[in-house]
Image (cartoon, rainbow, N blue to C red; front, side):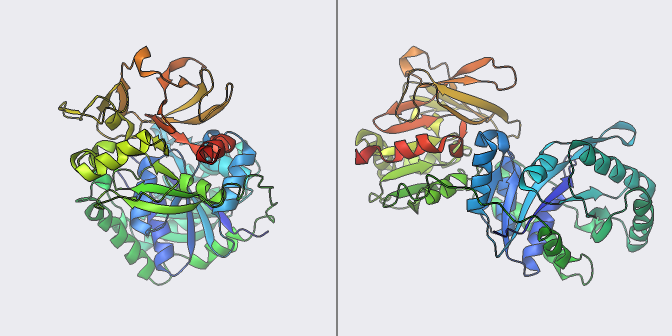
Length: 459
């Protein structure tokens, strides 16, 4: 099985758009068919990449998937043999005195997927400093595992003369092929996560990045685009994994609520439903009468207060959604929309509003940010999703929470910090066959549990 694949690991700089996003969009503009993956969790990278490229983005996080086997199954199912499968990941960041802090995600993904890693480093300092940074990054990667690093690409290069110096100085310290560079004038400032999720601002926030990508793709000889394919095809043949749950839920239709405020988790859940054999249908809250002819409904994660008006303010949508729980429809509300379902919820400005009153808790929202904490949940006594002892993994968004639910809210799950095994609280509430959680759960972390939940109405 041949899967052309390549990790593009870019240096990160506060306030600047990751250059890997511009590269991905430029690759598409240059006519190369892509399947895009992002190292996770990284909500900003997922949302910006989807907006700029117009492609679905799948999040790859070995921890959240629960095991290497499941992680590889996700990649195997989501990848395409006739496309360039690129994985965008952070390379690291600069410290004091030209030190370079290497992040673990890119080398880990490259090792598990057995594919080359292409570093992208900022080069708007002197050629000597940039070359030292590149040398430290490459040696750090080599210290982690035997990972092929065949080439380098520079970002924010001031002029062609500076690039010539980079080729000479960089070649002395790290003998890599240079694929070209992104000019400094195409560097873009980073917008806020909230801007990327607002209907009125998302396209405007993404436009400068789209324009930079289009300009990069149009510059003749600026980047060796065909080399990306060459490196992606250098991989060992993919060892196909068995897929025991593939197609087991065939015949079911899952409706996925679609809104710009519910767009930060990637398409992993949709991929899982398709893997299980389900048909997937988009449900738009703007519809006068949202879909009724579905077997299950899934609400993705995002800053849910942005869809509060459509979900709670429109009588048709409110009655439809509350009716899902009361009619014992199979429903999963993942993350950011869950606070809307309690007795009340507070916006980032402190104003409080009545919730949907499906659960006995109070929701609270802050301003969207990237400080995500990985978590593991386990069932307290067995429930409609998890058997006793089973677990799910995901992360805790810092801007969405449930305030002091107490015993009356009847939480399903205990939440732990995987780093120190300390309990962080409780989450997961159910009514009928519906489940809501203020965590962003990776459904691939328990494929069997999701399958059992989907087929509840069949029993």
